[in-house]
Length: 201
Image: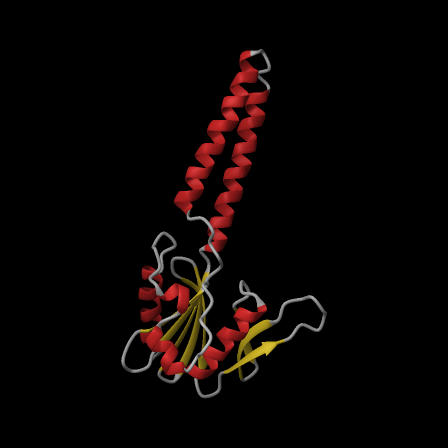
């Protein structure tokens, strides 16, 4: 069972490449799935819910908001480089050539920051509920960490912060083991996801 779930998740990750345009279920969740789970509220934009088989297997994919694709970031960076070096070139033409290395360093820092942001926004969590198992896989293009729980014992818990102003935590817990999911979501979105997970279990 675990091996089958892992193979299923590997295939799911391949279809959820960061450069791929996600289907319409990103915006509102799968209509069939929402009916089966009796979830009245629309799933947040950063959560994909999809039923993959008639056996009732369900996948929830949680990923951070990605306001700009990697291609979009490349276009933005190219524009910034063009503007920056045009200005630096004007100063260099007047004898202030020391502006050029500083402009290059500035664009290098910007490129590294954009790359880091893209890497972090490609991080995703896949919660697979299939048969008697609940598996949570975390990674980017493929699962990097995986946790498995027995479906009958798994509990979805909202852990409210003890300090005012701090966000809550959404946990899947069983027999003293737990994993936090949905850290990239706001409190209302975590509540919606928790409700959908409880109904799926």
